[in-house]
Structures are given as C-alpha cells and as structure tokens.
Image 1 (cartoon, rainbow, N blue to C red):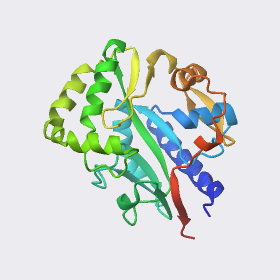
Image 2 (spheres, one colour):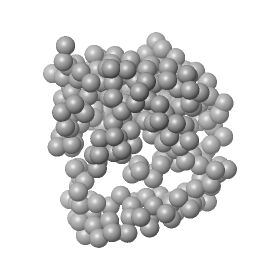
Image 3 (tube, rainbow, N blue to C red):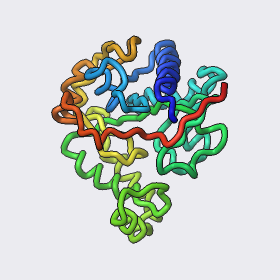
Image 4 (spheres, one colour):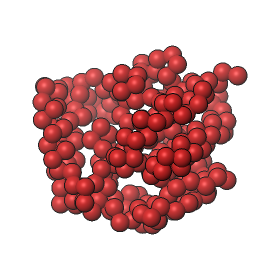
Length: 255
C-alpha cells in the first residue's frame, strides 16, 4: 500500500529546499496547476494528488538549473534530459534520493538512482495571444513520436505511429515555435518541451505573493483565483470520484 502522506511530507521538504535556493538567488517561481488548486481549495494537497508542480519564467528556469545541482544538498538530485539523458523527461524534476516513485506508464523509464519522489518544475515563455493557437498546433506536431511510453487510446497510438516521420523535421518545428515567442507577449505558455497546451495571461502573475500550502508559505501568482478560473473553470467544484486518480503505481522509502 502506498504511504501517500509520507510521500507528501517529502515533497513539501523538496519544495522548501527549492524555495530556499530561489530566495538566495532571487529566482522567480510559483506553485501552479493542481498544486495551486490544492492550496486555494484545500490549503494544501488535493487529497488524492501525489505531486507538486511549480512554474518558472524561462530566464529564471535557466538560472535555477545552473545553481541547483550544487545547492540542493545530498538528499536530492536534479533530473532532466540534460543531466540524466532520458528521452522521456519533459522538463525538470527535483528528486529525493532515498525513495522510489514509479509513475503509471513510465515503469521502463525509472533507472535506479533516478526514480525518487519529486517536485516538477515547468518553464514558461511569453507569447502574444494571437500566436497561442499556432504555437500549440506546432507543439502537437513536435511531440508526435512512436516511442512514447504511454498512450491513452488505440487512436493516439495509431496517429503517433502513422506520423512518426515528423521526428525527422522536429528541429523545424522547434525553430518555428521559438519565432512565435515574444518577450513582451501578453500570455505565459508552457515551454515547447512540454506536450501540454496550457497558458494564461501574464498580467495575472506579478507581483508574486505568498500562499499557505501544507502549513508552509510559498510563492503564488497575484491573482491565483483568476488563473485557476482560466485553467479549470469552476475550480471549487470537486470532480467525480472516478476521476480522482494518483500518478504513482508504487512509492517506496529507503530508511
């Protein structure tokens, strides 16, 4: 049986470590997506959730990567496709070394020493609202691959295999997406390395403020409820029980 409460305690400790590094180096970050929803609706984790998501603007994300490897401490490691060379790593995870967290659908991408409990860090870029639709269309083409470890349906699997030749022109998609970005754009959008087309208005974010999460205080956007409305609609409404799923297939600890 998964000890979810213990795992959540470890995740909060990881987040505290990240927060300390960000304060020291004046790096902007904020809790986001399901974690932000949990903070607003539950004052902590969504009861059935088993991960923490934070976001950083691209320039802060790059700065964090340059300092975090040396400053995280002996209990944690930085895991992304730059440091661990794993093709399925989407962004960056800060992992706990003395645990094992196996995600559904990613069982074969869990090498020993790089599969601990984690906090996800997502980069965001600025873009003009008029270019969001085109950017996300290119994102879908960029992420088509027959090598994905997990498919939600036979249709998805078939499409990915049929269009797998697009891998050959991935650099073209990447260049086109980069050209659409605008450092003065009115939207924040998830970086091109992430397959999810999430975005929200830039002016809802700064200046950052603090919010309570599991009896600690972390950065959040200035208009967090407006962002949640943008992302989830009626965010205070609880989902049906059959949609309350966790990501982990197994979580273990090395005491």
